[in-house]
Length: 336
Ligand SMILES: [Zn+2]
Ligand SMILES: [Zn+2]
Picture 1 (cartoon, helix red, strand yellow):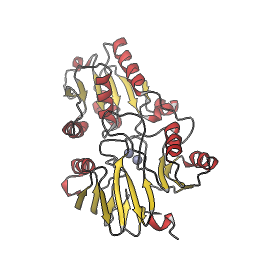
Picture 2 (spheres, protein in one colour):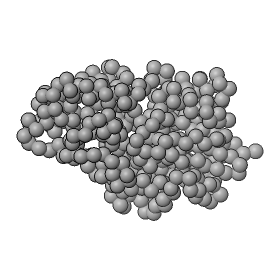
Picture 3 (spheres, rainbow, N blue to C red):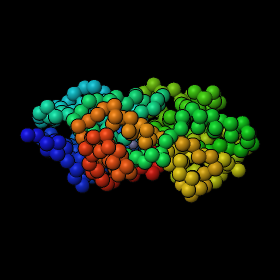
């Protein structure tokens, strides 16, 4: 009888598929990798071969240079690729542009590796697609009932109200360079902000890549002008680390905002000196995690990383056996 662990098993490098001889999101260089999405803890340079969506391959090329792998194979959403006797299909995960779940099929067994995912609408990427499976392998970054993300339009409305209230100050929004920044910009456009948005140089190439993939970000300007008064009443988006470094300190009396699921935790906002915490996450919150497991009703739930205990216990109560893999090397601090 075939057991799930014969198809996929945790190793120090990441989840390993022995019958197909490949790793999924390996944290160390390997011969053959399947990469779910472009965040740096999942997509690393130096593999022999990478299978990913065309968007993820483009993101990796942009971040690491075109020599990031020896060979690459693009698998558009829904297209099945054979790796020895194993079939791999990438389907949308709703996390960032090009993000995918890896559906792995072998001898009648179906296992789905979700990668990072969320269920709510994101105007910058395709929505998560539930796939019936024997084993669903989920992340649990926000796997505690205290984590419930509010509506993102409401968070953007709070930002715009603050801009209206303090027209002489600069609103600086910290947002992870891949995914979160483009989503925040797109949400600002949907919220009615039509003026140029100033962006830190570290975001420019990924912004362009998103635009090349049909995500309209509206007028963007580099946030490199020396005349400080130009930024009164402006919205500036930059990577979280840049807000507090030399670049960030050049702005006069800024309102520091930070878009992250972690902003639910007040101590984290205080620690970073964030005046306007925006709870906008690219990861599923507690309700999205449990609703997803409930909808898919897998034979087993495996949890890769995050706060796995509560989700595992919840699944067991629903009659779904759960297993915590405790994979290491996936940092969720800034991208969450
Ligand atoms: Zn991610
Ligand atoms: Zn991650």
